[in-house]
Length: 449
Image (cartoon, rainbow, N blue to C red):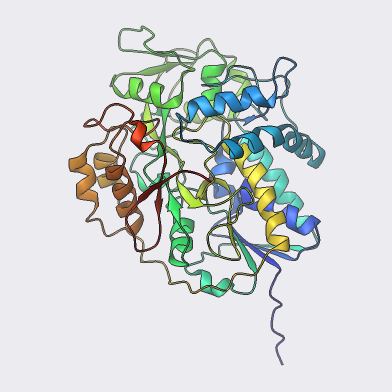
């Protein structure tokens, strides 16, 4: 008789930095862990992350200053307790990665919105690859972890009996122009919502200012903010600088979008520090040593996601979420550069530890609706600059997450951080809260607890 496979203590859906961090934390504490990845771990957003990890490591820095910068970028929507936890844990998570074998570059970099040099990199612009590669290797060799790639989950009902951690990434690939891998379409959010979990801040999607503008197959390729931190400048058609390159990303992105001929000048940068990035530019036909390369904004990072507490617990018993698919409130209305990989490390670990001692998932969960491609309509109607007319059109989209993005965008009748309404161009004190979407209900404005 064929023996039934034993249900693991913890099932992690997603094999990026958040998912692998959760798996290792739970397994190191004694749990049996199954990790399910929709594709290879090399296809995750965090594997492709060019930026670094922010941590107060310098002699002139401390977590309180890191927290202050994070809160300032978040434009009044951050959850202060989450920010404090993130910034206080950051140095320990860097030390932990070094112990695991991640070789960080010498020195600290500075990126947009930071008041100190506090960003660690590995391999120049290959930080995500370096971290994810080490974590994946440690997971594969761990006796209590089983990693299965090429396994797409279409309903959480098949995972009952385990504590379930969603670490499925964001949804910025719903936009036609994106820096994300095409699989980043919000599956985790829809899986959680179908099981009864609340979502929040779906309208808050960060557009990266400097993605390659190209007609030869490399359109949307990310040109890391680390380049601007190292001296790259943004130039208009006349060769003049037009923005502070290290201002918060929403400010820089709108300035770039307003200039159709914007270019990133990499000539002041030590280009040999970024070999992978420079090789991609050369493959695309550009010589950054000779002339600036054309750039424009692209959808990059989903701030909204599955509502969790500080231990990654969702509103559904036994269900946890970490990384870009989660909404902890740490980013507010505009993510501070290099806080995203840090979020994966901090909250991924916390998810793994919380799931170890928590209940098992046993909720009803409907399957996902068939996938569809909303990219063109989202770029037109919910891009860098939005308005009521376009967002209203999206309410009729066949894609449930697009309808949620539109409903939240319409409800936020203001411009704040990454969300810019041409018909409501200023912040409103009355909207200094989070738009929470419970299953079957319209978005409701709530404060973080």
